[in-house]
Image 1 (tube, rainbow, N blue to C red):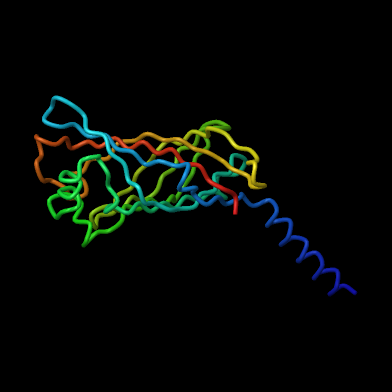
Image 2: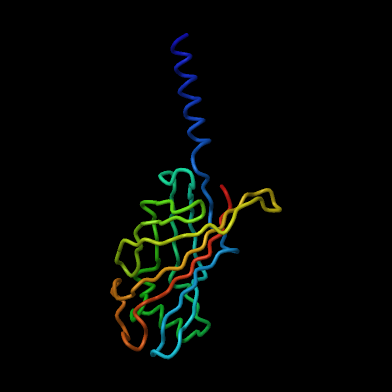
Length: 189
């Protein structure tokens, strides 16, 4: 009898723990964007995007320790709307997409700033170099979609220095600081 009660309590505890865990969302490729902006010759900014990416996230506003973020961008999918420039960006002068095909971010710690704002600290890996990065993410919203799913959206803008990742070609002609704008919508698993 006691063993049965203990087993029942254990099963209930596991189920309750699962129910209380943060929901995990798959990044919805069709409703998310990863854009970048970089200075050109000190006179203008060039805008581009990455067209291929994937990831999951779970940002728990009640218990940040239950949060997780994992994002992967395919650098060969860089798109600045100029084929010749994009081919050059994929070359060893910049991304070296054949040798280093992805840019990744994996969250390690999460700090709640408010109900809709988090500071996420994690590792960004680009061009074979991994560096710590803290970004601020803002919850745009959440809700049911017309297809029976549940969605959540987050937004973030942050800066990387390409020289921190060994991408030093054309320093001065092309800016060192790259502004990344991430608009992420996810569908609950």
